[in-house]
Length: 109
Image 1 (cartoon, rainbow, N blue to C red):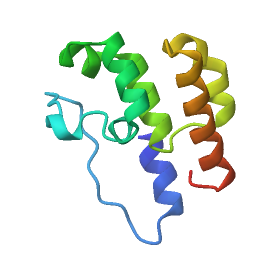
Image 2: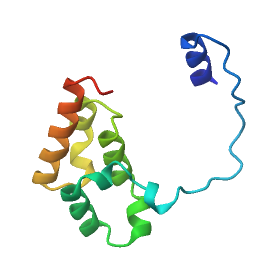
Image 3: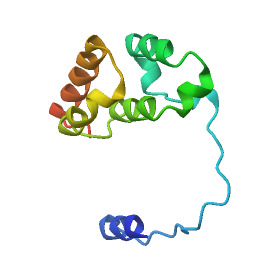
């Protein structure tokens, strides 16, 4: 409700989206899973070694967080605070830091 109220303030017209409790959750199709992350083959190779089974990869909080950063959600400062807990190698950590920092500097999010 707070999110709807915040969007309502920014909107030029009335937002008529109904907010209801979640009754059932459906996973997105495979090709939508971790879409942003799948665009970065070096990171995908690394995460595939960590999570060889597709279900474990999809369910991984670390892979979800990495996907979100690559999709433009989060700041370099937030990434720095949680980077050690994502399980990436030093090379993987440098790759995502560079990508997130570059996007932030270009105001992509």
